[in-house]
Length: 167
Image (tube, rainbow, N blue to C red; front, side):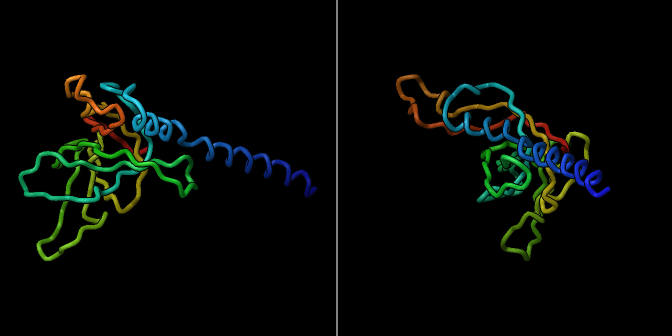
């Protein structure tokens, strides 16, 4: 009787672990490619992960965009992280935007000070560590220079025209 219960439980556990391990390899591969070649220039990419606050934020109150980080992992239980930098979001309360709220008496910011509004209009605090499916267009700054002046090892990019929703 016990073996009848153990076999289905082991089968379900194996399937669950396999699905977790294959969870987000594509997003990791995309970030690795973006940081090693120009193949994604002007292409729309899709990543699954979490928004993270930028390492430095200056907001004069007049800024129309904010450069956010987007963190992906190879699988859900991994401690290894890969970050897409310079995910450009409009500042405001419209869909696909970011809202940065820092009280006047607070000097340092945390994730609690950031909200994103997804493509469905839902306002989500970044401190909840919500997983999003994000799409955007990749642009390499080095490719804006004349060909003779380019540094072929500089893969700095920005991701624009971003849309995202809860995954």
